[in-house]
Image 1: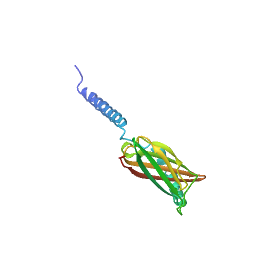
Image 2: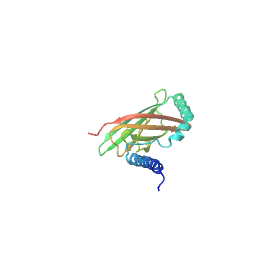
Image 3: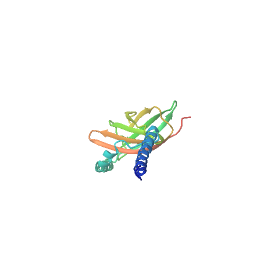
Image 4: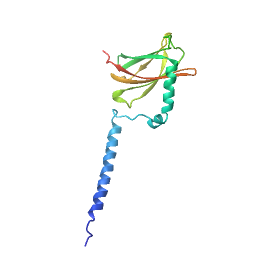
Length: 161
């Protein structure tokens, strides 16, 4: 004769296995879709919060100003143009300008670009391929000698006509 209550441990194990299987299925679906994204190395960024705030203070001390624009070009491309000026509006030339750019709708598609000088007025530019219309996040880092300036901007890219 079988012992009474043998099905309770089986039911509990089945619920645990079912929950784990559901979580694995959700993880697979979330990682397959490019519209879902996790901030890369977010733990390090959280640990480095004091450094981020110190960099913000250095940005204020430098007083640099950045204006950026995305200009649509034919063939799904766009030109990213940045102008860097100091506190008095004079161009910041001779700097290394690096941008991490990604469309908000596809936040997993992060691309890093080094902008080339595009004129004596502190303008730097680069051509983006696969530039989809919509809102973009642009994470800028300008380095000139020992001076480092960072800024995060959002820019809308209109569809090319």
